[in-house]
Length: 262
Ligand code: SF4
Image 1: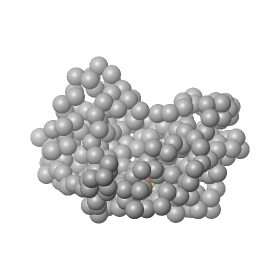
Image 2: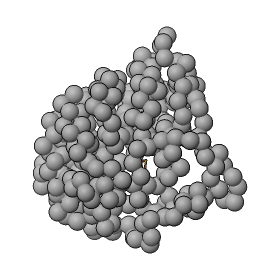
Image 3: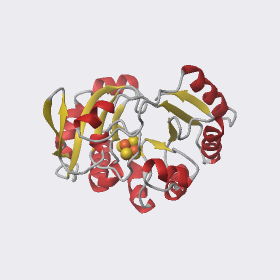
Image 4: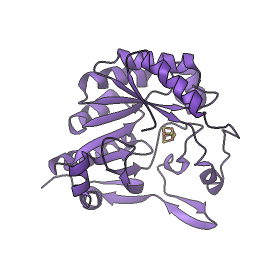
């Protein structure tokens, strides 16, 4: 029995039967709170740690609730047969799970004690000591590298990228498996040169063989209205299939397996 079952944290959603956030069929736990403010974020309700109210279809919805590890695991365990058949399990997403690292640690450790496969989706934006403690309990790290240019990274996410790139090198050395993910965002990083620079960096990381390109979409726009916030991406269209294929072939030139989407 885990010592960590009573540790609590703040989440804003749990989604079952995801097939895009790590191997197999997975249950995704969305942590509330993030240190970045990406202009294109499709989950703006994830960014603040505070519990919020968002208008959805004309009705007020409370975003965020405090839960214990035991409560989360009870839900995650319901789909054990699907995980076994598909190689799936639990994924911590957000927001950013590193912003609640004690809760993330307790959840990951308890999941592993219950023989559940674990994955995290992360920006890698935290001190490496925080990340290092979690790594032994993570089977797959899905880490965003959004841009290799720190100034541009800061202009679109509010944070520079030096810490993220340094952590990527250390995570690659110590993680069981690291997959690099790139949200492909118009006017930010959607040129062959920019994706090429990211792929070159990813290919230089120890043991990294896979990169995923995630095309920008506007599905989160209504949430900005619901939070009474301005949507900063305006009417920019999503990248075309042709453009994504072109960027995929750029990434493949660096010897990486490249998937479009999760
Ligand atoms: S890192 Fe992810 S959750 Fe955080 S602001 Fe950026 S897109 Fe949103």
